[in-house]
Figure 1 (cartoon, one colour):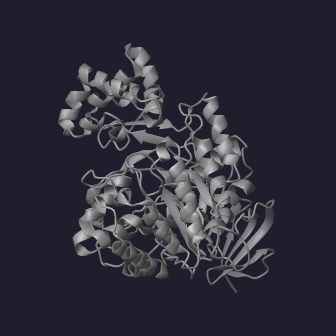
Figure 2 (tube, helix red, strand yellow; figure 1 turned 180 degrees about the horizontal axis):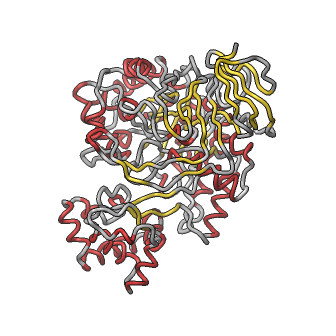
Figure 3 (cartoon, one colour; figure 1 turned 135 degrees about the horizontal axis):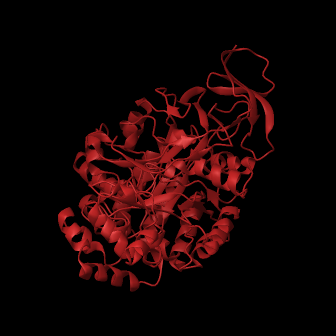
Length: 579
């Protein structure tokens, strides 16, 4: 007898082949029959013509800490995700000597905009080494499956201490880092992750440790991945925000070639103020191919909403010339934003920049929609476009933003979509990236930037927009991008398809109603810290190893997820043989 039988399903199997109709039989957590299912089952599920797809993979998440207080890794399962990869951007909570734990906690909080009070309250360090960390995770309850990259910042800090944030490594220190990284990967770390973007800073405002690494350090640490099966590299280079420099393009190729593993980065920047950036970034793939490497752009495919505010100000504080504002207390910041002279200073700082985030920001104030009004502010403004409010009041778009922020004591969000309505250039460029065969779709940043976005909703938003509404992809094509293609990239064994012998990680969804709701602030983190969250629509059931982790759009108490270790759960995908 089967443990579970799904019947009367439209099966989209992940390979990209046309959908078929029939059933899926599950026994001992694995798929044992597809199409005709003759056996009876302990649990029968008639899905009545709904679509069944493989569980979705998310290769760029930051659930390193959240898993310890939220085994469901919410809200990812609500949107069909059954496997996530954490430890990205060079950030992991291991190795962690007792004297380094505060540094690593504050580093993760600062770079990934996770409330530090939640991390302090929610993470109990029960490990020092990376192998010990993986063992703790393996003993922990999990809804989805999870795997971990090994972060450069923690490795560097473990070997160099405070000097990791100020000095280049000696030959002896680099050898020790290679040994520590090899130990972590041998225990099941998925590979090496790093980033040397200067805007990423630690809890004291200093650049993260990899910013002080030499080219030789990056290449020789990457080489360690080639010593172990089923590994890869993740990297965000320093010139990412302005388009890759020649040196960074060469560095990525060298890192990949040294390991004979793919190197992925995220995400190509579509910005009409700097129209050639994404083309140059994606072309780094061709350069690497010619040199024996494989550099993979990983794109955030959804046109999702992002929220900014002047309270935490993750993005605003990074704008050139705006740092002074966020060095103030909240009360001082409110008074400053009410001051015309301060507003003029902020505008002038943006006008002085010709490219990058500042160029985008200064032309987009009117596109924002007022969201989650708090602080005693006028609720009637919620859901309205800033430009419409500005016209009504006879002020500039930026003055309207400042007026609203002050009226709400900064407790208000400003939301806009990545590509606005009528922005034909950006829509065309985005479509070019989405369809580029060199690009992989599905980087989410789930679990991070909690005051700004909910990247976990990428599958439901893409199914709604790119499949149902715009027809950019068929359902079969979109599912393939989010399942089988990602599993093959990372070499995940027996995942990403509805096929006999594969794990029964499955999603039952309604293509006619699938989607994601609005951003809402909730206080469900440890220490009652806030985060943004969004619900899904049209996701009926999500299964991991045949057990239900989402039912009727609600997360269950089931914890069938597993820690996935390199080598045991992944196969090697060599850079020089991949297509």
